[in-house]
Image (cartoon, rainbow, N blue to C red; front, side, top):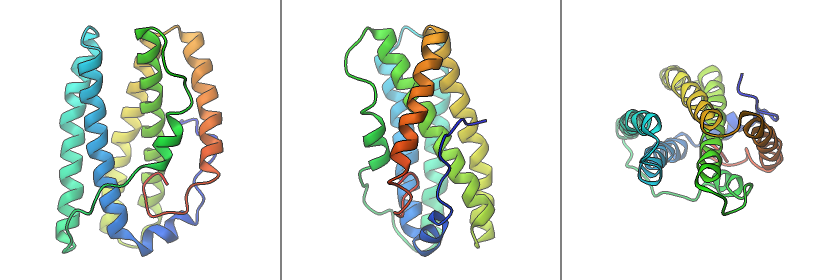
Length: 193
């Protein structure tokens, strides 16, 4: 369903198991960045009423996810660590060149968001199936469905606002590019890395 071309290396879970607190901090900031992305889309493209309405709902959902992860961190006797650069996202957003008309810029941003949500969904599924901490595994199972819905929503908006054939070609090309990025990732204690 997600269309990802390269699955996560199964050994990534071993890294996660040894670094749960780091993963939770990274995850918290991923949720915060997702809320920020939704706000940015509202600010940048206010004329797209349907998108704005969905982004308002998404901001609320993502910030509630941030709180849920932060609560997990506190329950483990930890504090929220410092934000780190997301190498995955940093590499991903190099794919589409700068510029283009507003619609092209919007479509590119929506495709990036869709892919980030798809990869998050895939990672949450792995965590839900393989984490030894069953409560944390259940937590990731519950979040997995949200990520899948977000992926579908962003991809749907890209197809709605852009030329469907062109958008699907860009999506396929972006998926290929993302697979190349993933060959060098999966070795760190982060959600995407």
